[in-house]
Structures are given as C-alpha cells and as structure tokens.
Image (cartoon, rainbow, N blue to C red; front, side):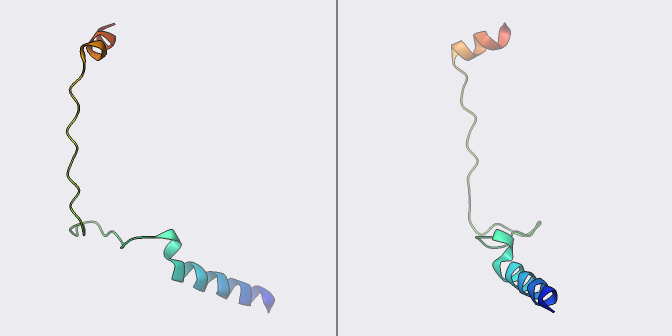
Length: 54
C-alpha cells in the first residue's frame, strides 16, 4: 500500500511542478510571448582573420 501511495504522490507532484518549467509552455508553431531580436554577428578583427588563414 505504501508503494502505491508513494507512486501517486510522485506522479501528482511531478505533474503539478511541470517538470521544472519556469515560464510559459512553448508550443512549436505558436508565436513566442516576447520578441527577442537576433544579435548581429560581430565583425572579425584582423587578428582573427590571421588565425583563420594559418
């Protein structure tokens, strides 16, 4: 009997906590709730260009 109660408690606890989901649930195909702009790629410095050609 204890095993069944423990299992039910864990199942309810994990369901209610949402498995650690802190924000809204993300569903593919739905628009995100906030806008996050893409960061532009930084221009490489001459030092970085020289390292790539080595």
